[in-house]
Image 1 (cartoon, helix red, strand yellow):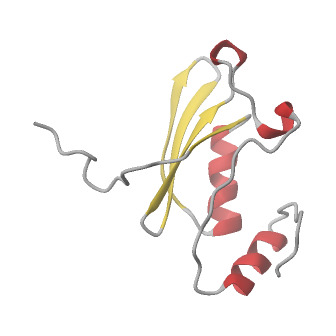
Image 2 (cartoon, one colour; image 1 turned 30 degrees about the vertical axis):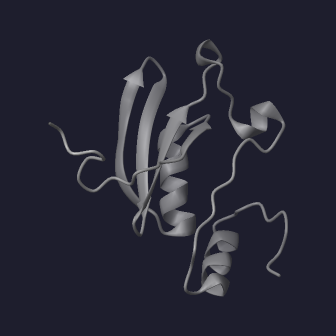
Length: 108
């Protein structure tokens, strides 16, 4: 019987839809310090990606009308949220801002 969850995977994993999975994965690495696990083609013009931050994993998929999924900018709405516990929020915020993250609300 296979191990559930698989070795090295979290029990619950957010799956985020985006326009460009390879670009999004690289941006998460650069802006937020994620580790890229994998980015692989999953069909014509589609990709599946996985990134890790500490013990947490986030999966990424190409938004596609055929699957009823939209990237947040295409949906014109906030479509998901992810909460991360950090030891140094000021440094994390500065890194994200320097990488061009769109700051909606500042630190409070």
